Length: 364
Length: 156
Image (cartoon, rainbow over all chains, first blue to last red; front, side, top):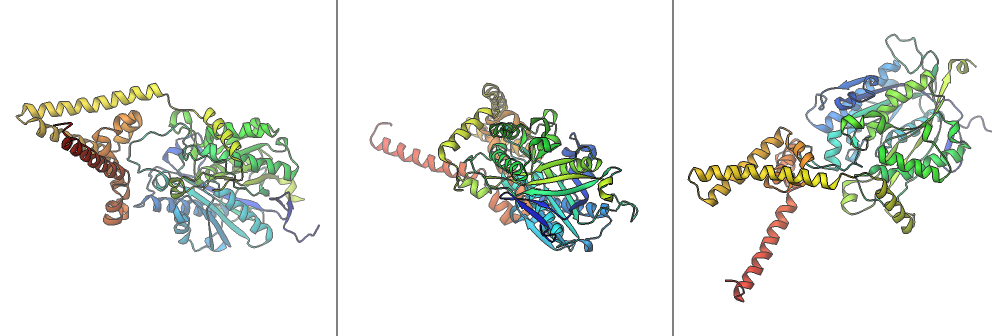
């Protein structure tokens, strides 16, 4: 093998990185409802005020994403000037929440749209860039805001209507991660909080790029049903491409399939001969308590998987609770126009392999 | 999008998704709608009766009833109470005139950040627009039918 190659390509759309890609810090900012959910105490910042001190919902989302990015930078002991480039996205038309949010920081910027799967897209491109040596530090951030998403895709907030039980609740939240080719440094400078524990840290070791899968569903209030086949396809290809089985992963997380999508994914993977039920969780079901928070099928949005990743999955990986995790954010690719014109809703899911690196391995 | 998946398989999947997707109980929803719609109508009747007791004729009392219900609905929308009624009552709160008022007030609140003209002006009828357009159109059609029947002396 060529030692210069940053990554080894496997299968049709997977790669495993030869050069290390560390997640050196991560941060999450969420709204009040998310703060009251089961993961409430794990988020870095819970903003009780839905407008985040701004005059419009869109500006609120931008501020939230900027806040998450700033926190991630601070935790890593970096300044915006240290970041070579950013991959960021959100759910608004023309991804303005990200561009307006990151604009003020003066960091070279790539805006992405992968609907709710955007954090997977962002981490994939970020990891590729780090592995290839295109940047020392790369910022990956995404956000979603309940109010701006309702306005973008559905009805004004004050309009009285009923949501079906298959509908999900857009998370008001943002998650940001900083990727680097060098290990996180715990001591210097003081008052930083990089993603490193007594046990070790976290590395992105591989990824499987998602394909658009369209089973012809047109119900935008049953996104779980629209996205589950793509999650199944990506997870299945990840297993095939890496020659792995569910036993090789300690946990598999999908983004926002919700209760309906979770059930479908388990059924679809069972058909392909894989049983992942014991290790499988969905970020949309982790972030809200469906019983008490009236969120129906679960949480959704760019901020859902990103904030759960930053608040729960990455810290637990750093602690070594899990050794290898498959993180699969899922997205439903529709616009208001495509929906009104009667188009079906294709789904996409990008898989990122996250691994715990123990202190012992680092020294070798 | 043009899907690569055969139509037959799509249909199979759609049936499967429909089968496992939970839905609201129809009888419960109908009962809630009946209750909510009923309460709104009773309030309307109280307003009408009150107006009549103050010496107004049926037409004037009816107008006062509509105007008052619209006013109450808009106020409740502003305080974010109407969406909660809507969530509970469904069609029961959607069909009466209060639902129409809510569907006009809600976009006005939501889009005011986009300005008086392109925000409120253009988008205030995003939900109510179809009701107005097709409401006026169907009343026009009904009028034409009425006119023809009158000429043919079917009705007097």
